[in-house]
Image (cartoon, rainbow, N blue to C red):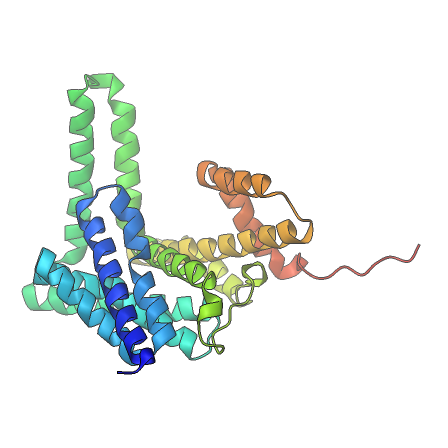
Length: 314
């Protein structure tokens, strides 16, 4: 057995074990598990790109078997749909020479498209309305939260503001969960691409990453956002819900472009790391700043904030 073959087998074993362990943490650790779920695809993605398609498939099969041994077949299928499919689709796009943004977009559309198709088949075959199931689960979570407040002695008029806020949030979530799923999947794919960039020197030469500060949405996205905005005025619940989801996704994409513009100026003017981290922390805590950054991304269509400035002759 050649040293290269031994190295490939070792990487397959390492990647499969690490990915399965991260997924097991997601299943068993309530808070930390959310973080490990986001990076579970990374070992599959990295070693698959490093060692090729066959090694990538071997990684997926090994990790799926390990998850099945620990959590059962159902958890193995969940792993395949949640993590393995994302890693395979993302790796396929990057290996073909797609840009990071195009690879992420393709991955999100493929994974959520297959998930939607599987949900539709299950719904038709079983006669179960999955949308109603989701809405019922949201309402159940609200009821449990209200019960928690009551156990802590908050009742009557004191409880009413919490009840109203939770019910309004639940109603919004019941309409917006498709867009939130898409945004969440995009964030997970983006996190894995960011991690992959740190190991770019160990990957094949054909895989290259453009700077995040150069990210720009297609110009036609503004027309999609405008159409969604006007569609919200239509007195039809289905059309309004679809338009709200489209507008939310468009807003998220312009927010990402706004962050890329901020990153461009950070690099151009060598802003200290402390100020950069402060800015990102404020993005998490201040909703108004998020809206401002999204508007920055939108207005970049006309202002072109990253256009090189010509020096003035004095």
